[in-house]
Image (tube, rainbow, N blue to C red; front, top):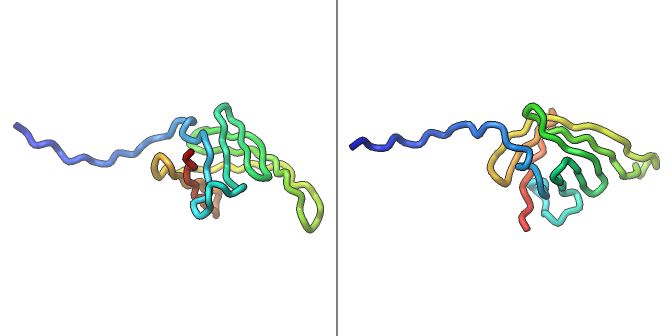
Length: 111
């Protein structure tokens, strides 16, 4: 009889796009906060003042967004912008999204 070899952690690989579907909050915020992100199956993205699309492409999360907020100082609309960067999957309910030099730490909102 042979003893079982100890388990060795293996890289998780690339997540499926469905991993990102659902509601996400910044790690230090409550899920009820209006700044939480909702990534809907099929690629739609919704947040407090942001709407647009999301995609998982070549190991990067790509957000193409339209900022609906009006700048309080200038009165100008926010406009369109794109955020894309690598993702580190922490676990089933946590990921870090890097847009250098910033790292957005996100956690899944359950329920």
